[in-house]
Image (cartoon, rainbow, N blue to C red):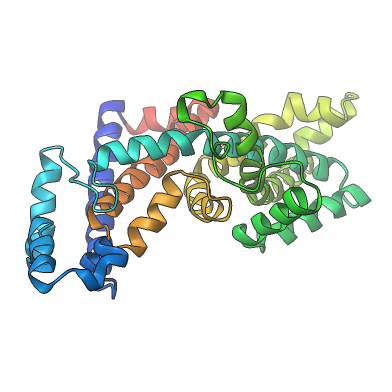
Length: 329
């Protein structure tokens, strides 16, 4: 199958996915008990009369039927306009860009840490199968895979900010410091604990899958032949098993984008980190439909791109897949 055809298919899948996700999100928000006008007014609700409430609803188009509002939003999306955030009173594109720049570093550091340590732990557990090291790694993985992300964040927050005051309590920058005076060291210092927390849970899935796959590979006939030639340990894995265990690990690593983004929503709330996850919670709890719809579209594209990268990486690493597609063409 030719590459342009594959790209066209993926583009069509993305468009269909965006349509389904945006429609479902809009229906859920339209049936939400949250009153966007009340959330917009806030504490001054008693001082605002009915006429002013009606004017606010008309200004933001909240007085229109849900179906009409959805198609109005859809027509604006086609023109490249995501609308204006009710909470921030800024274009949605600007809000997403600002918040995502704060979140991308957190997500990428957590993504790299979880992938590296998960793969290393899986290889170590398989090579030391049945030993105390294997049992410790499995216990760690099973415990963390059933641990809510926010609960792990609270425990680490108590441990490293209250009992052992090593890291700051939260926020993305020091309190009382102007934005232009904040250094990258300050931002990195505030990011360490949230990034570690977010990566801890992601390690378990990659480690367990890598362990099972490597155990399967080590039981194959060509590995037995390699052992007969004198190879063992990491040398054996490096020469004969790396490609076979790397493929599922890469798939899980790129597929974890959605899990990381979902975990970031909770972690940013626990650590009061000003990123896209915190903006998602604010938009959903305060009825900011334009901002929430924009974040949903952006996060869907983000996860889809991660899965697509995994698919293309698969074809690059495994020549059998490339040959299969040549035969189809």
